[in-house]
Image (cartoon, rainbow, N blue to C red; front, side, top):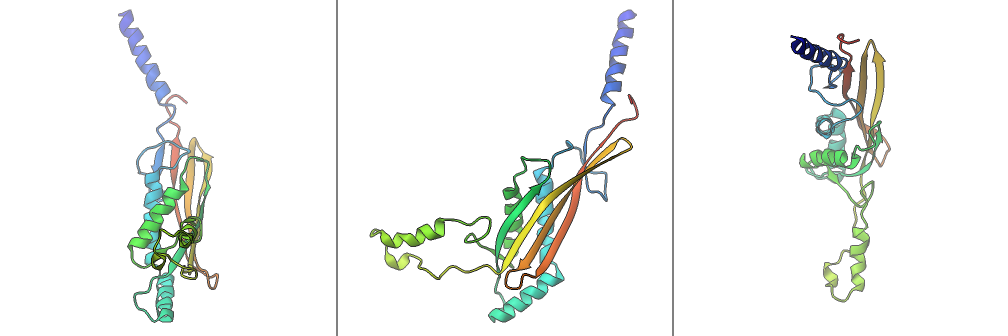
Length: 213
């Protein structure tokens, strides 16, 4: 009998202590019924979802449509695609392990796959030394000079994409919420005018359980 009571007490104590805090919850601030995960971090799945949603927002933006129509009129080409350079998407969260380049790549992939924007590696965050090195091949006698790109052939970007993932934390009544905001801006480099901006909140919630407190 004593063993049974002792075992029951252990199980009850374990239940009380395990009830001090609930698992963290990933949530859209407007929909708090999403799945669980650890507070203080942001998953790549969420960032990728936000990136794809951002790309869709840009591609369906009336202001972007106006810019694209004007750009194609300037080029006298109804299928012309403006070239976009990617600036630094800043990590302004408390998660130092967040790889912003992966998030940026997901966003650029979604934009390029639309056929409405091209992305350059000649300028911006992802500027590559490859282009300069390739032009220096003219000094190497082993290469056919007619196949080597010359000076004055690189196209300058017309659009610039910049932004950040920002986090803020609030606590009230035993509940801690850490909200991330996916913030982006696309601007016309020629005029400096912002033609599209985007803010998408998502985050984590941790709630204390009534039992054990």
